[in-house]
Image (cartoon, rainbow, N blue to C red; front, side):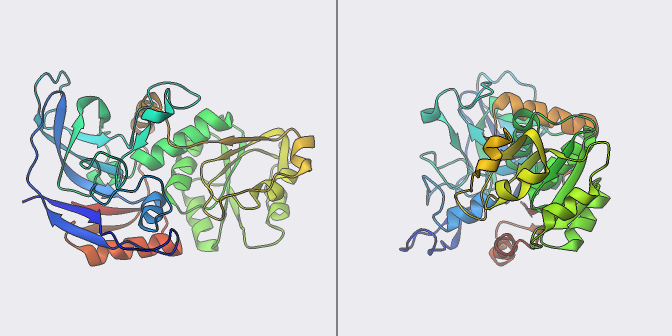
Length: 353
């Protein structure tokens, strides 16, 4: 019988509780109107999954399977399906209720993510089989393995929107700073920006991660633990363009204060997360320099298609840090969560199903 991983409920305050993983057997589902039955081949973790286990994410479910990133094979098609995807490798969309609006979901009350949250107890990729509407998949780029395809949904969509839609600086010759290199989103931003011809610089907690980022096309990097990292970065910038055009940030904290001196007037900070703290300082210097701070999260269905097509066109392969095999291998999956906790990974953490 198929497996499913959910959270086991226990008492505890948000931020202090840590819900255990629970493996269960479930019946194999059957597709109905416009549905596809997909056998999941690989699923990938995101920081949101760690937050869910700590009850630091809204609308947590103890019945829905975990994880929102996944790829698999279409095994059955329900009545009235019109797409020609039977037997094909596909990537699942990580959210629902956002079609094309560039500013945000058309109706926030209908927007939701999948995996460990929400009222739908069937959606999530930490399971053997999943039923989805036929409109909620993209055919996997043929150059990607199942594990690589599973890395794309949330990380790729978040990266695409933060870089392409929000920063306005995904262009050849622009100087971009990507903070906290090593996580799945930051690395995807790096790969997209390099493919677009931008000059990319990074911050990290370790020189090893900076060196790996350079191998992927970054021009330089600094250790964000250094008090003068912004001054170090300024010395790396070319004399022909001695400033940063945009910062793509997922950490928060003091990033505005530290980056204002090296941002051009009217420069952009595109913020897709705040892993350091839930608030950021906004100094008067940013106002006087006309800096723009833009929030960014996930993206629309149209942007998801654009992202997958770009990956296919540029033959981009997501960076994988570690793969473990089997949903029933809970000990190894716990190890992946520990890597998320300690930020040891360089790339995505994947479970092959």
